[in-house]
Structure formats: C-alpha cells, structure tokens
Image 1 (tube, rainbow, N blue to C red):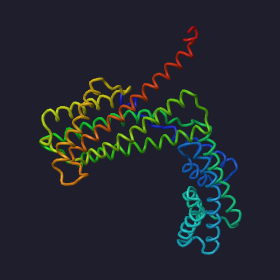
Image 2 (image 1 turned 45 degrees about the vertical axis):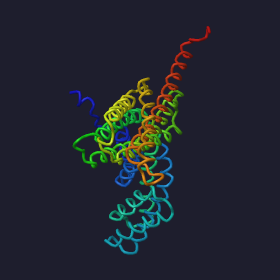
Image 3 (image 1 turned 180 degrees about the vertical axis):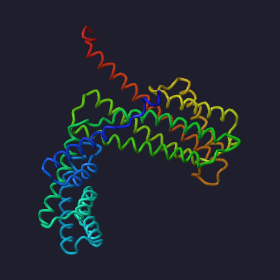
Image 4 (image 1 turned 30 degrees about the vertical axis):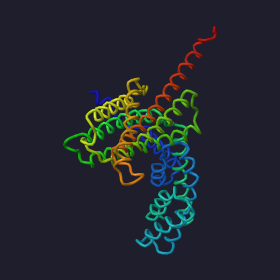
Length: 362
C-alpha cells in the first residue's frame, strides 16, 4: 500500500499535455478545422519550462510555415506519391537546419508530411489551413505551459543532492575497502557505480538550469532563492567529490603496501568521510581533524622514505602516495562543505529571529 501511495501516474507535464490537446481540439472543432495536425503539434511542443516554450515557439512557427510551404510545392509538382513524402521531409529538415531553426525541425517535418495525404483542391487554402492549425497547437501549448502548473524542480533537486551524497559515501567506502580486500572486486562494478554517479550529477545540473529559467517568468520568495543557491554550492562540492572519486578508483594499491597502523588509519578516515557525507549538516568531528593531521604526516613520511629514496624518477609519485594525497584533498572539500552548511544554518537562524521579532531588545 505504501508503494502504491508513492506511485504517481500523471506528472505536471503529462497533465499540461492533456489540457493543451483538449483546448486545441476544442478550438479546431469549433472553427471546423482539421484537428489532427494541431493536436500533434500541441503534444510535441510542451516543454520543461515556460522559458523554453516561449523561445521554441518563436522558432517553431516559421519552421512550420517552411514545412507547409515545401509540402504544398512538392505536392503540386509530384502529387500524392512516395517521392513527395521523402522530398518534403528531407528538404524541410535541411532548410530548417540551414536557417538555424533546429528546435522547430520536428514540428516542421510533421507538418510537412502529415498534410500531404489530406490536400484539398486549392493548394493555397490547404497551406493556410495547415499552418493555422499548427499555429493553434503551438500557441495553446505555450500558453498552458506558461500559466498552468508552473514546474517546481527544487524538491527533485534537493532529493537528488541527498541521494548523490549518499551514493558518493558508498562509492568511497567501496573503493577504499577494495584496496585492502584480499579478493578484489572487479573494476567494472566500481566504474559502473561511478558512471551512475556522474550521470545523476549531470541530470541534477540540468534540473537546476530548468529551475533558473523557470524563475525568470514566475515569482519566487527570497527563502526559495537562498535555498536554491545553497543547493548549487552543494552541487559544486559534489563535482569536486566526483573528481576525487574518479582519481581514487584508478589508484592501484595493495593492502600489503601499508603497515597495519597505516591501514587502520586509512580505514578510520574513510569511515569519517562516509559519516560526513551522509550527515545532512556535514559536521566534521574533532577526531577526524586529528586523524587527518596524522594522514598529513603519513603523506610526508611516505614521500621522504619511499619516493625520494627508492624512486629512480625525480618527480615520480607511487600509487600509495596518490591515494593518501587524494584523501587529503577529499577532506578539504568536506571542510568547505561544513563551512557552507554552518553559514546556511546561521542564515536560517537569523531570518527566523528577524521574522519573530527576536533580537529587537538587544
């Protein structure tokens, strides 16, 4: 039952598509115009944001006009044959691409090919009829997308960020554990998990761009803006974390490369990092700072005893040193993340005190 409650059959974009189709069909039916062209156009022109709808509507109208004109021209020359369909589709795509109307290519091609089977005797009348019905679909879907159910991607962005930090913590633990494990995990599994992380991160970046575009046309509160800005900083930190995880997954070390004390320190620090990543406030304990100091000494000790004395190359760094260095860099990102979270917490506290009149007597 709980899973059924969480299952959503219709999203906002799906509902807006249905409403756009309904009003488009209603208007075309009222004026006795062919409905199918307008409905198809309304379906394919619903966008993620109102900003995209407006921008692409400006492109799709001239593109549709080009498609309708080319279809009329080829129909008058070759009739209702296979060659007409092929030429109308190819030339429409080529001309729209040449004129940089790429966002309108799909609508223009549909307009060009769909109107061929239903041409009337008067080609000019057919041209303006098809162009008019297509325009109705574009206009209705744009208006619906702008005024009705404006999308709010912020909850999805915040959920994605939380999932990404948890994913990062699991991946880090997996990479370091694999370093000291007797039976090594196949690298493909770790690399697959890393690709999933980066793909999820790119998707969150895309949702953030949608939200920024949407707020250009719809109101938002100061609190919403501040929360969104904080989320963008957390995404920036995630990008750095993903970078270090990407480096760590390719470090080739063995458990025997480190002493028992060094191995224990690395595993403890990994556990500390996992806790910070999974903690919503990203708080760093004093014990972690002490362990990172030990890790720093361990890095210089390794450099002195193993790199400078044993290496035949002046600037060669063995994988063990790279592993320690990446973990130190990882801590720097976590420290920045903790500072960001503390500033955000202080900002929320100050806003709450101002709204409730606290601090006036100070």
